[in-house]
Image (cartoon, rainbow, N blue to C red; front, side, top):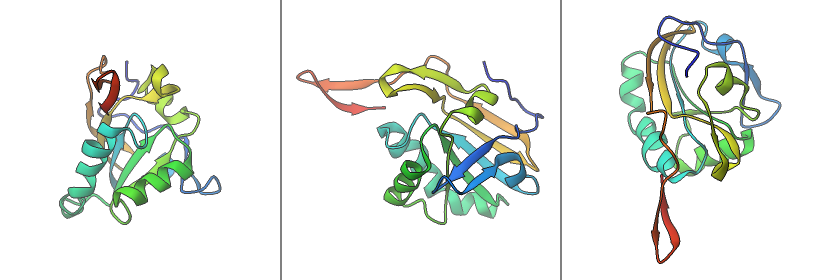
Amino acid sequence: MPRIGKGDRLPSVALYEALPENRMNILDFVANKKAIIFGVTGAYVPGCSRVHLRGFIEKSADLRYLGFQEIICVSVNDPFVMSAWGHAKGATNKVRMFADPTGAYTKAIGMDVDIPELGGTRSRRYSMATVNGIVKELFIDHPNVKLVCLQTDGVPTYCT
């Protein structure tokens, strides 16, 4: 179950952007900002690419118009993978791609889930609106959502 909810302060945990040297504390980073933070199961996971990340990229101008200064995607991946995924999907200057390589942030907010097919600990899909590091809105995928692959002749052709 999530350990974070409306009215809670974000945890003081390090995330990484683009390189391991670009370490930042997420609470400090959004301390004086209005921000959207969303978590996805993994970089390059088809549903996360096609729907979740893409949706925030496409709506980034609308969200900025509403006063959100930062739009942040978090995944349990390394910073190099998150950066490459963001570039490949056109997130530059629209969505910040933050890596949570050990899952520390994801675990701290209670969004961790074990998905062996993707290597173990991953994030449930969620989105939150924060103001000065306080959660104002929180939306979470159903807890039993699993990686689903459609198959053609026994070969996975589409996963979400």
